[in-house]
Length: 247
Image 1 (cartoon, rainbow, N blue to C red):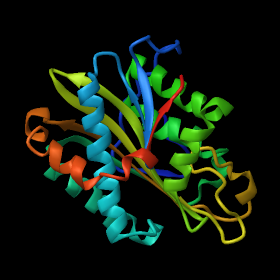
Image 2 (image 1 turned 180 degrees about the vertical axis):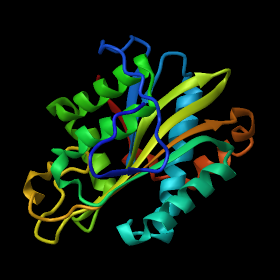
Image 3 (image 1 turned 60 degrees about the horizontal axis):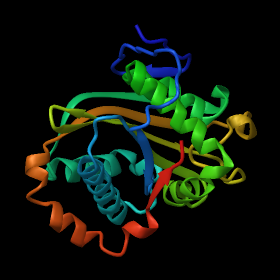
Image 4 (image 1 turned 45 degrees about the vertical axis):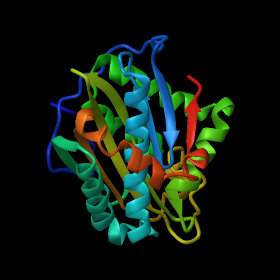
């Protein structure tokens, strides 16, 4: 079974399948689209990658329009709207689990906690690629994509909400193992980076943390019927939201 972290309430536990860490394949890539950081495994086509980036960005934009603060109090409503938009575009849910932490300040940093929570959904090569992407975002060469990610993921300085995961090609459809993470800090502790924030500054205060692991599949044949409409809705937005991550 997956390792249970002290203080976590796991509504559904999953089996971790981590493999040894290796460099990503030449065909693999990763990118930021708004508040999402996503790995694309070898076998994912350019069109499939574009479809994932556009559809998930539209879901972000629609949810942000309705719940612009992405506060912890509105987290369920925001996620409900996000998933509803994805379903309307041809995404279906295969697995779903929730994790809630009363106080995350004892767990070091957000990136470490993300690996423990969302890494449990990933198999060997996916897990390796996931770690490589997070490592890459720590480096100065990816300061621009990280800046785009943080600008979209951090709200009012003290609320962070983002998505992170891995996309693979499943018989011609996109399979997205997505972790959606959200947390809140005290008024005197601004969030410097949604993914790389250290909890050490919050060691004496509670940091509520909420995450969802969801495996979704995009029916690319259906999405093809709405692709142009999605692009029209996001015209003028994507150039400020899409950045490749140098691995």
